[in-house]
Image (cartoon, rainbow, N blue to C red; front, top):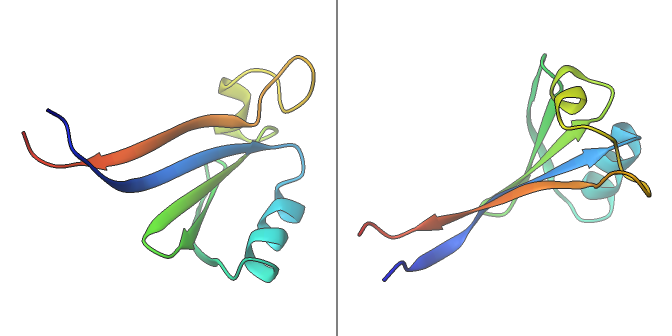
Length: 84
């Protein structure tokens, strides 16, 4: 049986990444962990990470349409599991 330990990270696609990052930092108290040139802003949320991918960036363009009627804002989420 697979045993889930915790949520490791979640990846959100954003039309307006600076506003989304500002919300998570100023309202929820997350810290910017790192920013990658390919278009990824990683935020620390306790033991978990929130990755913000601007849809206009290199990674964001690979994922198709951005948030809206034809697109989505959740790219994926990942659980840390126990060894099996």
